[in-house]
Image (cartoon, rainbow, N blue to C red):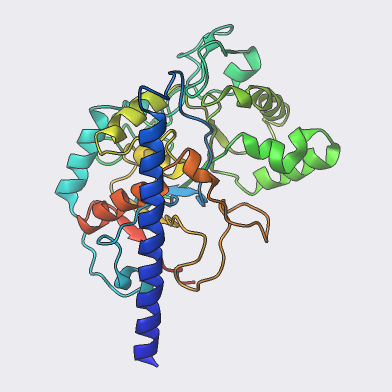
Length: 347
């Protein structure tokens, strides 16, 4: 039985690698075709911001993030089968990686807008939309901004300014894609929709809700609805809000140095990048770019919050490079920079 199980595992791995190689080849061919001078006409090539099977992160010593990394010589059977790889944290490599990121991105400054960083009436642009689209900062929006940045100095740890930091120990940091309001809460158009949203937010009491509203102009209307709701229930909800500004230019610039330049980075790799400003060690869970569970073989949805029965889609190929992200993260895992877990957590 053991030999049969091992043989089956090897077959699954072989099929995964074969599929991944094909996807990567097609993606490369597509990119080379449409970015050549003959076909590419200029203008923004990045599209929508959405998570890929990314639930939430726990900030402090462990970060829980989303999907990525794979290649024929980078993914091995022990990781999939839950066997001990004797992973050892490489503190020196971790801090070097953090230093490299900070050379491109001022994470502490851009993690969230603050009351002092914007003015009422100021026009904000969107990272992935034409410059003609703007969002005017309202009194209500500004009232929801934190007085100071959620993270000060360059990172958590001994150097952190303890009186002001509110990302401590096991704080729950959850990213909220504005599109969820439209997809699952009917834009809060009915009393029932509003009640459902309110009750779900109550479950996040004590958490920080990180809301990227300046990625695409299509989020503008939803953002206004969201702002009005939070202002109305501000005294009843005990969630802290973080509203990042225009951060993607610098984030994209950094990952291009790692040969990762999709039309748009996934939410998971974005949050992983931000984690370096908040954590002294990062553990990743759920980073997996396929539509099947590597432990059970059962089907998986594209987003963790998709309704039961939702089929996995490969539409992400139009904007993301999930296999390439997965490959990079697994490389960091082997170097001891980040711990990547693909097995089920123990109860």
